[in-house]
Image 1 (cartoon, rainbow, N blue to C red):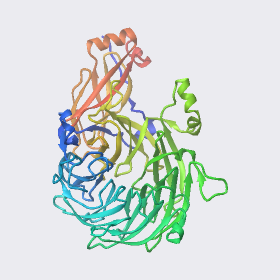
Image 2: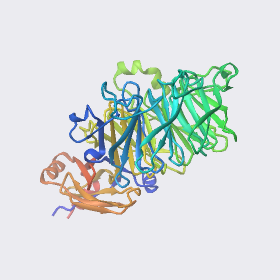
Image 3: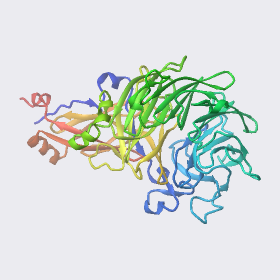
Image 4: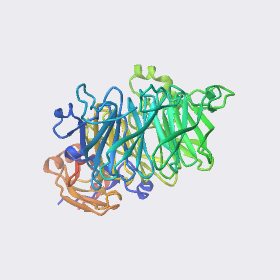
Length: 547
């Protein structure tokens, strides 16, 4: 009788890294709860549900209590905000309400579909007060900021006030200069101040916030040239478009730039450092070529690392000094090098810049970090990739992916995942949401992971599974792709499941010395995570077959 032994090798991780934490599996929620699409489009995708005001969705944020997912939409779309209700257990979505610049959902003649708001033209970014009572929206076309009160029970938003760069007589908004193309809004750690980035004005404006009414009053501003004495001067603030608050510091992404600003006791800002893709010698900024065309930034919950992606498919991890706010480049990943000579020639300069980066996925820029800081998600063309972040040293290790185009089985399958324009991870680490500018929001949940990439054996082997700690209810389901069966794992645990090869698979192993299995692990109520496991006839198995 032939007897087989199996060798378990963890998924893409060295043994030391695997011991520090289990890799996550993540899969799209099944049915409409995992896929909402702008109403005129969803008919083409039966597995999704329609939702108003999602046309040209730009970003997403969760309310502080996690009860709603709030999505701003741009000028080419709905010009407003869609509020999606979120299931606290699964993370699934249903449409709740909307408020837009004209009360429509992005289609001519759709007025009265949503509530009518002010200064929401080109809504780009949204942030909530710490208590969740007010939402603040940066709108690029309106060149302003609006605030809305929030119903804590339903999440419905009601316009409460607005400020614009140009306010005409009779408008509801007041006027403040230096808000051209407003694109990003953030609140100070204590909620006492609101910061607004305006790339057309090259300015960041500081507003004092009234906690009771939510109202804003301009306090100060900071800009690259000082705005002829109107603002404080700080180098590296060319076209600021994204803000990230980290305690007493504010990190600003701009045109080929990353600036560090300090927040003083009064909430005002002061320049503390800047990195440019090409900094002039003797200037105030330092050079970092990888910052060419930056896309997004994200801060780990522990404040140790700031991550930045760019449009060329690079992910940079900066170490951060919490006391001074200083950033130090620690690690970077880039798309795999082109093998085509012609392409390599065209991209030669970029490849030289990225020569010391580790090869990984082909990203488009979206970036998110789980609430516990242990998983980093990046988005690419029809794909979301996950990376484990070691909280001890901040280092990243590739883990897995989901993809709409998954013919080779390298990733778990996904629906309506074209090119994510934004990613959002829930505070509890259980869910990841992808926003697509075509008018879709898709929801994924951490689930069981297949941790074996290779194994050896003839007729039977053992395949590793891991259940993320964030799944408090554990992972129970079925493993398919060979003669397999059910599994049940507690949260945060790993287990090796016995897999028996089919007759055809055993024949291929005998004749070709290897077989590649497309194994799928499905937890009830979730889509399956898929992993290709290569089975070889190794020396251990041959020894076991001796009489």
